[in-house]
Length: 192
Image (cartoon, rainbow, N blue to C red; front, side):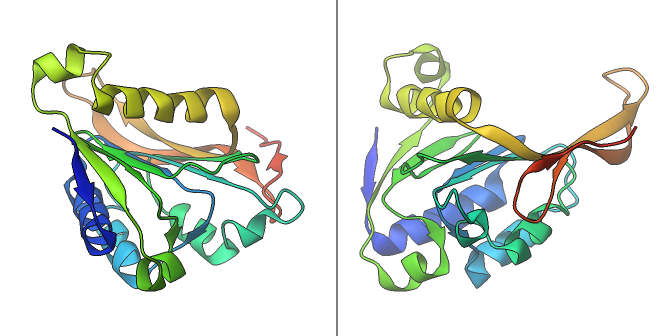
């Protein structure tokens, strides 16, 4: 059942979602300026090549670094399995992992976390019935997240793990940058 979260619970639940993500972490926020608590939680996940991290930021088409600082972008580049996308019309703020989705008013921004009165709706994927019910609120939020990711945003950076061996016995080798960008988040050609 969905739960209404106040300012402090949004902040705490987001940290928990980062820490407990198993295979997927989705961050959709027009403005990203990492609060110390978010950066600490994310830092523990940098080496986890099995965690697929997707970040969508937006706004400030003329200077995208106002929406995602170069410092935070360089931090995210360290992840082993990450996709960073840009959506110029983004205003939604959605956070999700394997078990929860959070539709919130809060940007992933230190000022928002420290100063704003925020609210959010937390949805839990309770069981297989919920996961298979496309009409449930959690599935609607999750589905809308992928609409933003797949339909309305474009990749500016992507790094994917490279494995050796069969799927059950695969061994992580390294991570490879598939898509890269310049300092203004414009995609550049990679020479293979």
